[in-house]
Length: 377
Image 1 (tube, rainbow, N blue to C red):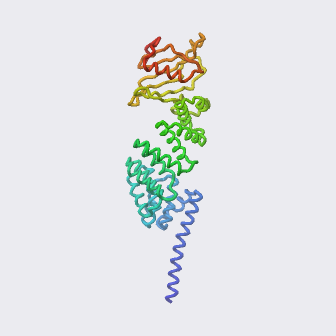
Image 2 (cartoon, rainbow, N blue to C red):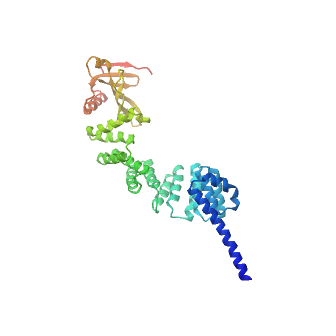
Image 3 (cartoon, rainbow, N blue to C red):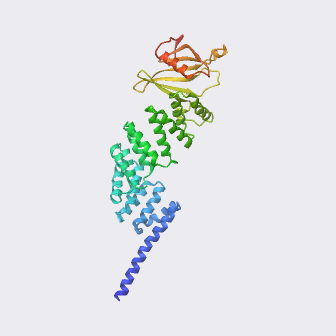
């Protein structure tokens, strides 16, 4: 009799476990097939009957449907039934991050880590929480711990470098971007981002021999990254390799004609930057050409130490000069409400060194304008 009772209890216990596992298996299969609505419709009302893992799966369906409140509800239900599983803590914390409830997210990420201290995703999510709370040192520590675990995602490598960049620690940022480049997937956006920042930081250090191959590699992987065309053009102008810059300028003109350029590249691109006294001179070229109206073609902005534009020197297309058989562009200056014209002119085949020298002559007031007029505000 005792043996029969023991066998019956074991049978009931086994059936209960089987029923729970069977439900969990069904839910996992539905999740794998992205049948989130079916999970929600069929299992939401059965929350009291479900195991901790099944509740977690229902919460995941809500997570995938971006129903944050119900996702958190089911993760809490799962945690209430089994507080030893780190997965619902992680999904709940990730959802709180999406909801911008970063302080709450920190606690749940920490709970997940306390249960499983070797998961890179947990540390990465915690880093995101701290980063958005602008607690950069704590974020840096979390991201670094993520990189110490197996199967670390790309994000922590990128954000370690980004934090150093935010802190204006350019040398550490550059080192971190190189490290990220060596670790992350070459097919990812993070790899492209690492290349872009390496090129930028090497350029800032004057290491154009290192910046050039970095931008070339980037453009081989992402030929529509038009910002990088401008950066590479600037590298070649710094090195006075103007012929190497021309194919990339042509690419930008072609992209402009096809309407592919946006934001600050839509009308013009920066092709050179250089220092003059304590000012930064930023040289831009506009795409406009072939019209009969006056337009600016090359613009040299004088930027002060507060990053404010003081005035500009520009080449202007002169239809009158062209009609009289003269040069295509006149060198002019716009300073405040005064427009000045100088007795310096250029055609399309001009040498950049000549234009740059003329701009510096105007900056240093070695030449005087032949005409000046007030412009309307």
